Image 1 (cartoon, rainbow, N blue to C red):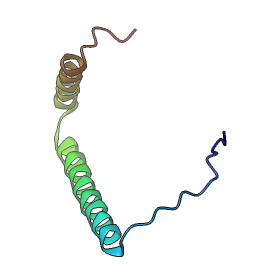
Image 2 (tube, one colour):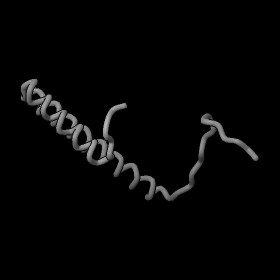
Image 3 (spheres, rainbow, N blue to C red):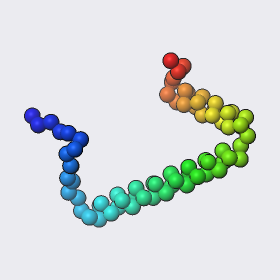
Length: 73
């Protein structure tokens, strides 16, 4: 049995049109993420420290509810 290493190159063969479509979707996703990040930074700059703290607590509660985590032990 041959083992693989991280230095191996995996070669995939696919039609160029399929590759171009994948690249187009990745670029679109990256643009959306960059825009969301910029919006979040601008929103946080407008908030007071108390508002940011309340927002962070709300986010933690949502994650706890979603993933069922009871404590940070």
